[in-house]
Structure formats: structure tokens, C-alpha cells
Length: 159
Image (tube, rainbow, N blue to C red; front, side, top):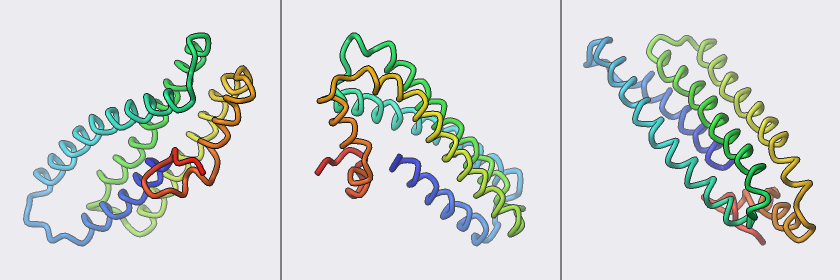
């Protein structure tokens, strides 16, 4: 989830940079550059999500018996990242012509995508969590607790 927060914050900075930068490029060249940036960002997102999924798999000590449920959780994590990135990409693409209202609405779409993602992840994770033995549940509780999200750059620091 820390990755999502970082993505939200960076989208605000990117939007501000586009709005503030003088336009020496033609609009077509700028749009092309944005689209190339988005494609590159999608590849980087997929790598970050896979890295996060693999780390979480190891930290939660997912067993072979839990693997089918974990596959569902991982799938939702990928879908969520794509949905949030789609909202961010839409914001980037409209940054050159966005009004203040457009900017606020696009930020709202990103925030809504994030809220929807949390709900989907919770629904996908619940059956796996319920099947876990109590010691593994405690481990998951620590990993997903608010305390774990306060460590700089890490959603997995356990106190």
C-alpha cells in the first residue's frame, strides 16, 4: 500500500510539473512523450508489483496448501496496480489542458481507485487469512498493521 501512496504523491508532482513547464515541444511531441513515459511506467509498475508480491509471499510464509488462494490475492494486486495506474495515466494525459476542476476530479478518480483497490484486496485476502493457522495470522496482522506502514519505504517493517 505504501507503493500506492507513493504513486499518488508522484502523480501530483508530475501533474504540477506539466502545468508549470514551458512548452517548447509541440503538443503532438509532448503527448507522444507522455505516452512513451506511460508505457515505460507500466513495465516498471509490473516489476514493482511482482517484487512486492514475491516479498509478501515469503513474509507471510505461504504454504503449498495456501497457494491457490494466494494466486487469487496476487491477481487482485496486479489488477489493482493496473487500475490505479490507469487513473494516474489519465491524469498525466490531461495535464496539459486540465482546468483546476479537471485536476481535482482526476485526483478524486485516483483516490477512488485506491479505495476500491483496498476493498478488493481485503475481499481476496480474507479467505486466505481465515485458512491460516493462528501463528501465521499473527504474522499477517503485524505485516498489514498500521505500524508496519510507518517505516520509511517499507510496508513490511514489523515492530
